Length: 149
Image (cartoon, rainbow, N blue to C red):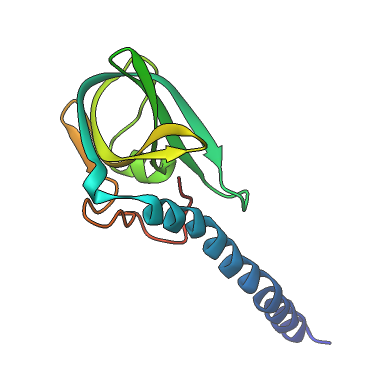
């Protein structure tokens, strides 16, 4: 076999094996985002202003690529977990979160695993404001096929 033939064979193998795996990964990664969008209820929209972030959690995507963020914040005497967005989406929109940050956050208040949670639709930290989901439908604002919360 010539070098060109070997390269073509290798490219064909990569296309036949890796591309379908990448498509499956993208479908798996966006499935959780669609699932949360399905839980999103616009009639349960709530907004919190000046709340303090207690903890930020990074959740690896099932595919092993990318990660998404959730944040626990203090709301009065209670704490609430907010499902946010892929870490890359927040970073690209100039929002980073850490314990102690004061934020404004809104979204759909839902029950997850028997506990109240927030599927966040918008977050504001300082002057940076990011729309995470469509307020009416809960559809994610980030490109599908990326990591999800």
